[in-house]
Length: 419
Ligand code: HAM
Image (cartoon, rainbow, N blue to C red):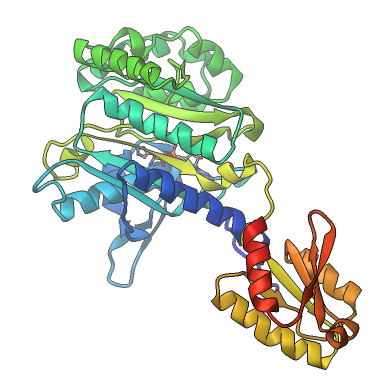
């Protein structure tokens, strides 16, 4: 039997982990600068946590969760997203006890049994960001600004921030009734799935890809025209604060998020370059979630970035996790010299490596290239006899001679000076 990874579950190979780390490290820097702290929560939770928060009638809960009975007979689920877990942890550890405001982030794998394609996997990773305890529209604008800032720090281009307001239960009840009435009038034009969906979760019809349904929905009533005064004022505030921060946005009145916990602001960042799975990040406000999960009446807002999709649109950079220096040593004496030099350089903070087997210079240069080393220090038999080594800059293709006594200090100062 040939053993392979499960469909939709990917290995992240050594050639890729450098980029993953860049993305993760920048996320930590940006978020911690804005006062966020990291939290790590379990990957497995009670199924009820997700069915109650994400919503029984969503695609995620209906057909995408990895749910099973564990050996004690409890129904458990591999998390399909992180917001519910962070909310659970916030409540469980009474993080609101002294001050309800908490700014948290978490990075890790999520699991959804979707049909795999480019940008859509069954195990994927998110940077998840949540602010609990603040209902002011400034915080909505700030989290979106942080998301866009993070993307620009990474050099990602061609992204658009789309926003909407999904209202609150007060405005959503009359809206849903009108939407249902509209859908009943157009029932014959809808696909069988949407005919079923329209009574339980009519908003989902906006997400249907069938052309007939899309045509119907282009005429459908929009939540934006039903917002109650509070939601309307909140949305006006969010837009004004985004403008204060010079964050460009587009209003998408037909946006439907695939999770039911949202109230008021919802948003997505889309990148055309991604094709069909074009949302690189999504989020929104969920002012009732904490209470619905058994906590106090505390609002929240956040977003998650899909890391695989982010990596698909990341500008190419050389892998930063490679060594700065490769030592190519020819002959046994030179190898011994290289062996101790490479170790001492690493201890001193210079990323250095050697090839070990005394291969030809050509083979060692190929290896230096493979590992992405910027510099190669060549110690050949002739050089050794003459008491010198050659430092070659692989980018500029220049080389310099360095006297062997003091090579350690010299390499450190030259490499540090030029990186
Ligand atoms: P979501 O829109 O379901 O929201 O997912 C956020 C992002 O995760 C998506 O925009 C996408 O980039 C990525 N993603 C989702 N599913 C997949 C998949 N199967 N394969 C690859 N990437 C995927 C949430 O998860 C909410 N928890 C966001 C949030 C946080 N709302 C408030 N706080």
